[in-house]
Length: 273
Image (cartoon, rainbow, N blue to C red; front, side):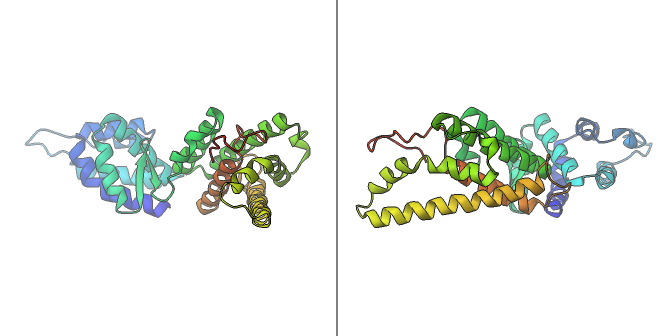
């Protein structure tokens, strides 16, 4: 991931040169919280004096990026500021990023195959915010923070289902138990939906059993990630591939047990899966 982002930054160089003045590039560096004072010796000068060029300035910016603790996040911050300061840059950055399998969402680079934002419109406001926060942190390279956010979204859903259906105290159950018990209260709802497309009780039972098993297994995966890869429980420098698996699993579970669903739903009601 970090290598990909650095490739994007390299490819953006002519776009930055065209889209910003010499001093404008310095302003972007400052707004991105990079040590712009280390560029103070680079100045444009009127002829016949010899001053620094934009290329020399960008070389120096590259050196600043490489000296940052997290160069990928530094590049993300630079791109965010560039788009905020010049809205026309968004389309140019997107075209460039797509060559490397990335795109721009909310002024931030994200992998093209990591577009799950469209799925969150059906969730509660709290869950939407938490999931968007997970995607944002992921894009910034804060992988353990992204893990924490997606777990919090799932906690929100299970807490509401426990309360709504009188399941008990969710804090007394393991993470996997919380998810499985939350999904179990929706059995009648799911069976009604399955019977809309099949009349065979054996097939309905088999389908429900397999779906329940899939949720249970995904919950185990999430619980394992939560223990090892979140801000609260996990290690620093969590691999971004693990977080992508976690967000995929978490989104799948949340979409399967949205908190507004009820076991009292009738067959002719509309269910938003």
